[in-house]
Figure 1 (cartoon, rainbow, N blue to C red):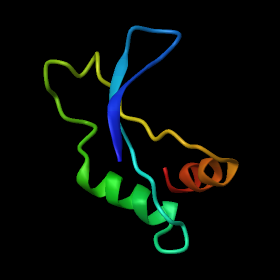
Figure 2: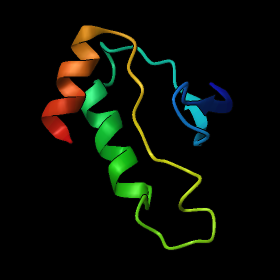
Figure 3: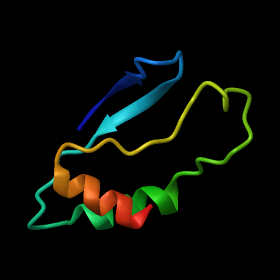
Length: 71
């Protein structure tokens, strides 16, 4: 697992990021996304809400299609 920051090229918003390497034959991207959605409160009202964003970053067309179907 890697962690760090991801910044948008079009704005000053940034995200704390975690890259999760996984074996899709053991756990699917669908299950990983569901875990994130069930355990991450992206709607909290903290003082940095305007600066931080919540997002799922994908690395393949398959992940893109599956994430769009879930979210």
